[in-house]
Image 1 (cartoon, rainbow, N blue to C red):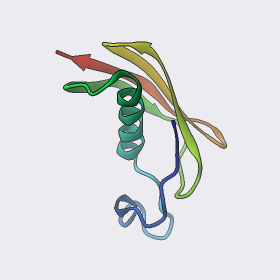
Image 2: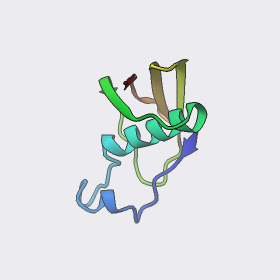
Image 3: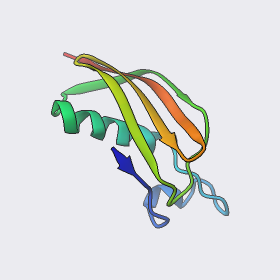
Image 4: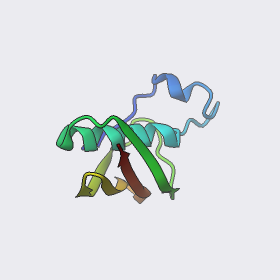
Length: 93
C-alpha cells in the first residue's frame, strides 16, 4: 500500500512546529489499514515489536509491505531513504 501524509494533516500541527515529522502512530495506522485491506478487519490487534529507523516528512511517498497471515504479520514501511519502520502485528482473539 502506497501513501503520503498531506501537509495539512491534523497530526502535524504539534509534531514538530517548524519541522513537521509524521508521528510513528500514523505510520502504524497505515500498516494496520494495509493488513486489513488484504485480510479483512480484525477485532483486536497489537504491535508487540516496532522500530522506527528514519523519519517521514509530509508529502513524502511511502509504502507498507508485509508478510504472514493471521494471526501474525511482519511489516516494513519504506520511503525514499530506505526502511522507515519495521515490526510485527499480532491479532488477538
